Image 1: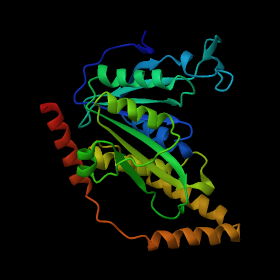
Image 2: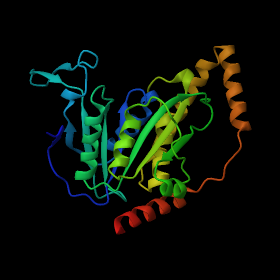
Image 3: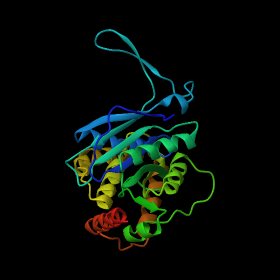
Image 4: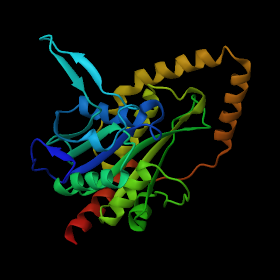
Length: 283
């Protein structure tokens, strides 16, 4: 029995599935914040959800009691919602986000594969954010990887090389690979000394890189003001502690010493991305 509950079966044009989970792989809630941003700035509608019953310990992730406008008492359960955006993008988008599941990861990943397959998604993009030794005063760096060697080479992405304990994103990538669904991981590093949410600068960086890779417009420039305000607030807080100030200067020097790499432009990335998908369709 499927854990995916559909409210409609949309007919989509060249869709991409974008996934983010609130939890370990979402420092500053940058990844789920990016999906929220896309949903709120386009005509998104909810078409499905994954039943939370099998995937959470409700003593750990508790449902909430709410009172609606009519005065009725309702229970709001942890949600894993699927939205779609159609017609106004180079690709239709299928967007999945929610709290990271705690249990039955293999079954959960099968549900995500079902969503990608039933909506005929051409590719999956997972978004993430990790606390790292980076300064708040420099551009947020986004790293990308793809297990598909051809896709990684075309887009200038890394091949996964990590070995050891993994999380839901690593497990999901394995399931997608086994289902022959191309998948790209984009993850932003944010300062570990200010890793709490929200972090609009990290969200902006993820949206910008997603746009550069896929060619799908995200409107990330509209986050410029809130990103600057966040950076100014952090700078003010750092200035109150001489030890943290020295530490941030060291991080800035490390960034400046790092060698620069000639990366492909956003137009080049998007062109290669579209070419790869065309070839996959032809096959």
